[in-house]
Amino acid sequence: MQNIVFIADSTYYKNMNAKVCYDLITHIRDYNEKYKIKIFWTDEDPYQTHQQIINISPKLVVFFEINNFQPKTKEFAFVFDMNIPVYLFLDDSYYINRNTCNCEYTQRVDGLIFWYNNKSVHDSYSRVFPNKHITNINSRFVNTETFKDYGLEKKYDILLYGSRVYYYEYKREQIDDIQNYIKQYEQHNNVLVDNDTKLSFYPLRCKLHSIILRNQHKYNIHIVDEACYDSPVANAELSKLINQSHLTITCSSIANVLLHKYLEISASKSTILGDIPSDYYDLFKDNIIEVNKFMSDEHIEQIIDNALSNKHVLADKHEKLYHNIHTHHNLKKATESFTNVITSILEK
Image 1 (cartoon, helix red, strand yellow):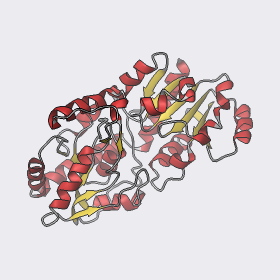
Image 2 (cartoon, helix red, strand yellow):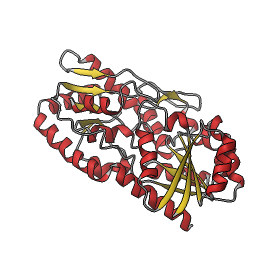
Image 3 (cartoon, one colour):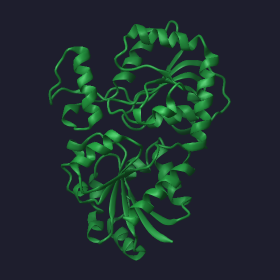
Image 4 (cartoon, helix red, strand yellow):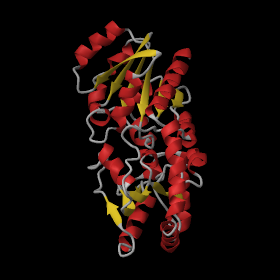
């Protein structure tokens, strides 16, 4: 059995209140039947880690980061001198200019692994790094032992959780889908976006937030306090809250990507209110209450009213997705997908 080493950012992959990242990486380690995987966290001593990795003699090293080599991760850069393949697993993939092109360690990795299918991201990074091997696992995946149907009574019409307000100069980031969104935004609002214009990363989530607040008199809503990365309500507590909600809001952001919320909501048997990331259109089409960033508020309100007046239709939608997610997007499938990625890397 070949040895593989993971070096993971301890803040994001181990110590966050929300355990989606920790669940993924440790399940891949604990239930992999083809490779022997050892995880080193970036809050460990780099010198001792160096000695252990020499003794392990791995066939591959994978760094796990959110979107860049953090200062603590850079202390483990000694692996670049060990004559073994080094890959970088990225969660946020939206910042080529800010985090990737300007980082010498990202320049040095042999390849990149993304946490979902996304043709736009793949093509955009391939142009920047034509000589790197760029691949991905098949889904965000979800811990279906935590996010599940708790059999709770539906008491909320609409639930909103997660980040709403994150603004950045996205014109600088040459991700195809982000630039396509900016063109639509300019046409829709009759404005010109320059490199210094800050745009919301979650325009649809912000729009829906405003709409449901304005309609509190007719919707029974529950809003979880916003947090940048780490939600104050997470894991089983979050799943139970979702399980009690007819509709739960999520969006694919301006980057058109599959975010964790799509799977958390579906696995907890609530119906998604939001748009569909294009790479997963077949999965979500007709199984969510679909709205988009450029609809009028009045149109969206009509869609929500119609959905909440036909709760048996909502039940049919979330029932279909629930079984699909629990069957095809669980952590067992995540382990299989990551094992296939490792095998393809080693074969190269």
